[in-house]
Length: 260
Image (tube, rainbow, N blue to C red; front, side):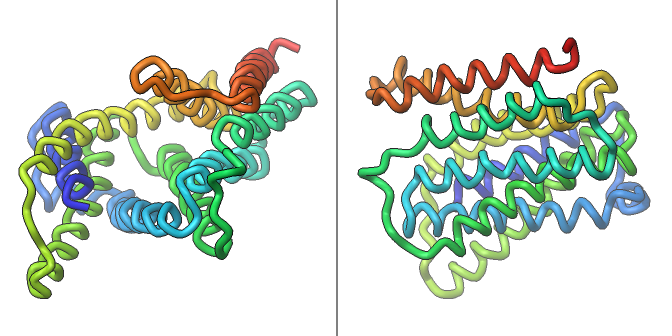
């Protein structure tokens, strides 16, 4: 929790520094997206907390599947709200990509039997975050304000985390560890730019959200799986290998759908 909180605060600082000119908190509160960003920032840290509980109760594989499968929420939002195209080729690619997520992440021998309420909350929360980013970017966030908008999201999550730490201190359950500060700094820089470039990608006129979120989620999954093999010598099952091949096929179909 300490590293996650430091990460959010560092990400907020990155967004403030990256903004093209000095800005004060009273100015930030005048933006039309300000109060929406506060709510989304709270969702950020709430989803993280639910992910932690789900990992303990159901296992990491379930968290991975629930969070990545949530891509169907922004996809459906883009189709029904923004009238994005959804031809047969794209539908086939999305379905293949979704099935590949299951194949890559799930190890039936390691899944713990438990309540489905927390995996469902991970699914719903992750999908809500992506959908909200799409909605706010489309309706409220000026491209010039993406950095300060991102900073506000992270600052809200970070200060909420600080309140959690204060509560832990009052209960005498808090113990500071320096490694969490270092980890939080490293994670915060990467986290800021991941959100920044995701929002920039959402604002790109030639890329529909149904395509973007599919490529993003499946691409992350395949990349981390490959890095796990190369850096940490993780072993892939035949099911995992099939999943990677299907993920590549799904990405190709979704990417090329507009050409058919």
